[in-house]
Image (cartoon, rainbow over all chains, first blue to last red; front, top):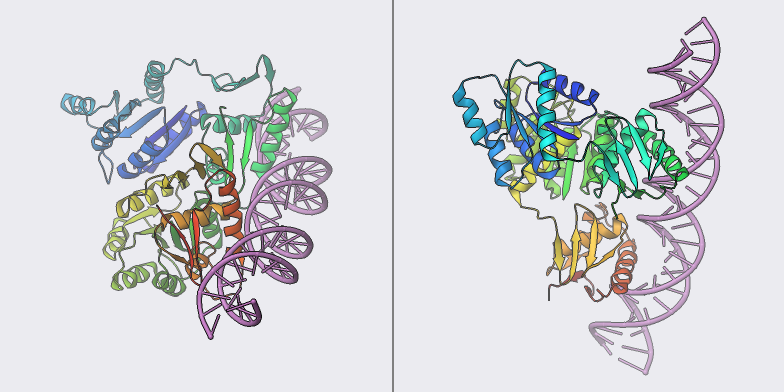
Amino acid sequence: MRLLIIEDEPGIARFLKDGLEEEYFAVDIAHDGRTGLDMAMTNEYDLLIVDWMIPALSGIEVCRQVRKGGSTVPILFLTAKDTLEDVVFGLDAGANDYIKKPFEFEELLARIRVQLRNTNRTEDALSVGNLTINPVTHQVFCASTELTLTPKEFALLEYLIRNKDRVCTRSRIIEHVWDIHFDSDTSVIDVYITFLRRKLESVGCGNIIQTIRGVGYIVRES
Amino acid sequence: MRLLIIEDEPGIARFLKDGLEEEYFAVDIAHDGRTGLDMAMTNEYDLLIVDWMIPALSGIEVCRQVRKGGSTVPILFLTAKDTLEDVVFGLDAGANDYIKKPFEFEELLARIRVQLRNTNRTEDALSVGNLTINPVTHQVFCASTELTLTPKEFALLEYLIRNKDRVCTRSRIIEHVWDIHFDSDTSVIDVYITFLRRKLESVGCGNIIQTIRGVGYIVRES
DNA sequence: GGCAAAACTTAAATTTAGCTTAAAAAAAAC
DNA sequence: GTTTTTTTTAAGCTAAATTTAAGTTTTGCC
């Protein structure tokens, strides 16, 4: 599941990202409304978590614009205010649920799950062709044979499959899977692609990961 | 889209260049303010990314000089400082947006897209006749058959199509596609025109690129 | 038609990106 | 504290992309 957090306060953003990644969500962060809106429009997220009080473009405005674009992605808004008025206002603008700051992480998680349950009934599993991966149980199946992957291998495969039919650039991979933001001089990706390909090949799921030279990799449905 | 990065720290500059090139931007780097300003004045860029703390000439000064020259090119500044004061100062000097270090690559990309969208709306697909190219996905279609091009081939075709119905001189091509700014007697262009024509011909899109003897090439809509 | 300049084509050389492997380093398990 | 597993680094290798160079063809002009 891919989430976008639009939150200007670095501490809270960091806290949410870390916590949600532990729950196996893939998390992006935007620090202001305009950037957030742009990211929401150009990438496919399963859920948006939007702070109501953010610079450049308010949470309400982000919400409106996203809905205006025809998207039905669930939006959870974070608010420090707690008057009924604000809540009504937010829900009117197209948000699906709200949570008041300060909140318990458990509660946020629960609300996220509720929203995700409503949208997709895919039971957590992701698949391409006859390859299926389950981020919750960390299992991978090629047809009916199970495959054991290490955490990093799994994370990489998951990222590629979540973005299937889209090119995953090396920069995006290193950022999302390794959380490295300033290192262009590593060949870990190559090595892990080799690991993955070898394991996939061994159970008859070869040729799933294609190389786009000079750019990155892609996993195609067809 | 052509970008100039003015950043003295080699690691960051490298990281940005690699990442942005994966996103199909043409990227130049300057390692100090004076060189950067000079490059910004003598070439046409679609966006400048300027670090605030650079040698020879500060980012603020570069920004001021560029604006003084009458250019409206979007400028994104990178700053390690995060006081409101600096930000205001930077925006006053003529910058369009800023991003605090350290930042997520995704976020930087989003901000770049916001700026580029404001200036000229870059629709994804470009086309001439039944030939369509998509700079975002790096795909080329002739009617409905896909064509695979190498990065340089793609860049050349993209440049020609972006300038359709206009003659592209050899010197402009060598400057924009190959980033060579001095006169040299190379015949790479000829070779790549041959490569392109052969591939286009093979899918029935022949005769798209016409030669203007002594000047360059043109791609015509009709 | 003959000539020279420009453009085209081809093949070979060079460079670069990605793949693979082995070994070192780090982390986790025992 | 030792062993095992996972992750990262580094190096050599391979294949693809790019460039160079040389020979051929086309074009415009006298």
